[in-house]
Every structure is written in structure tokens, then in C-alpha cells.
Length: 127
Image (cartoon, rainbow, N blue to C red; front, top):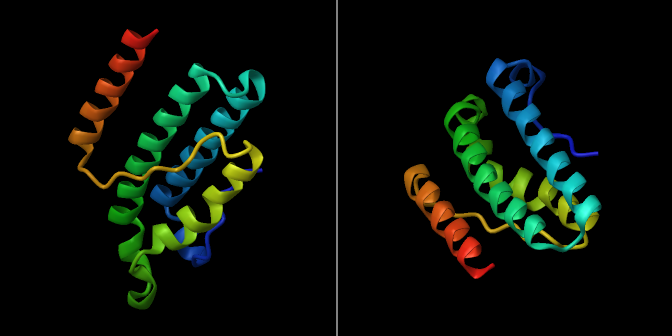
């Protein structure tokens, strides 16, 4: 259902880091999809969506650091945005009735961690 199916050479697909990123991507989307199917549009689903967005930002950074340099020079620019954000993640939107809008943030990881903690704290206070 949620495969990390990007147009990339078979040599890169055998790369240990690529396999790890691919598996983590798939498991994260399946986990969110399962939560959505079980609970629908709820606060819990909203939190899971936010967590998924931050997780995907981390995965994007790893992919750009470890996999993009293995690509031919012409394909490197905006590869993640073009092949993952624009294609694969649209599938999640369709399957969850638009419940988890992708909101990529391009801050460094430390800032993203702080932002997530603040957002989680605000949610807890609002309850």
C-alpha cells in the first residue's frame, strides 16, 4: 500500500541506508493510516499527523544526506520533493481523506524537536 517506490537505480535500492529509509517510510505511513482508520479525525490522529510530519522531515534529511549524493548529478536537485513529497505522499492524502496535510519544515533537527515539544505541550494544555 505505502511503498517507497522511487525511480532509482537497482544498485542504490540495495544500499543498506536506502533499505532502512524505505522501511521506516513505509512503517510510518502504515502506522498513521492504521490510526486514522481506527479513530478517524480526532486529537489523537492530529498528534500522530504532526509526529509523522516531523518524522518525514528527519527522513528527508537522511535521504538527502546519504542517498541523493549517490544519484547522477542531473537528478539530485529537489529529488525528495519531486519524487516523494509530490508523488508518494499524495497517496497518503487520498487514503486518509486529506486528514494529514504534509507540512514540511526546513529547520534543522534540533529546532524541529523543540517545535514539536512546544506543539505537544500546547495541545496538552488545551485539553
